[in-house]
Length: 311
Image (tube, rainbow, N blue to C red):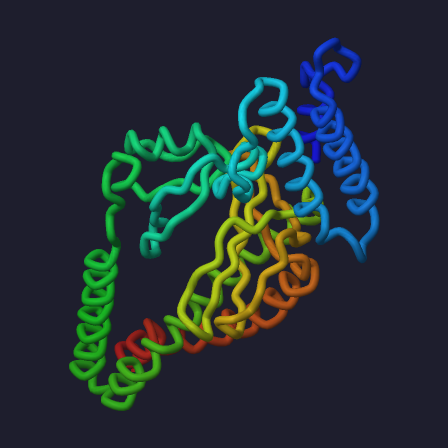
């Protein structure tokens, strides 16, 4: 809305200028009417979802206006630029693939078409390609590192069980090997959930605010569809919020209300509209799991070995 309003205010078109094509004035009025209708719809909850379509109509009217003033034929009707509707109407179709998807035809503006043909990522504010598509380094895959961590922890658990056997505590060795691994993992995951939820809740209470996120892509296998929405902060950084849909044919809304959590390091975060409810719920559920799992783990490791050595 802001970008389109600035475009109308700063445009050089003058309705009363001699030689202005009559239909150009109609295009200008259509753009103004679309902006006015979008402004009213933005403040009415039952019509908020019509704002993107109204803005698209206004952008199309401005494209027609510029073509008429320049004496050129009207451009082909294409949707707004796939990467960012603020780029205006698309001018061509190209083949593009996101980092986690297959190639598909998309409609883009002239600037993004040139950048993609040069192997560069789209202009800031839109989808960024993967490291390989953008010419950057290939991201490091952490699969091998995770396996080494798991193997190291398993070796430590086996060594601890062997120490209990040597101390004469066979039941403790079996309990440590079978139970402690599970309770330790539960304590670790529970601690991560509680810590993450507590930090997000603190930021939400202090600096969080409601905003609107725009749908940027929708992908995923049948039954596990993912709708990705984007929020752009005041510094131009883009933050994504992913909403999982239960059915592969679920139709996402173009604009969704989310909470934006600004961070001191500039790495803000967009969370769902129910964040004030489920963040405290995560803490209330995760904290008992963390405390109980940690208590059992500490009793088995190193509690049983200390008890066996002292007895």
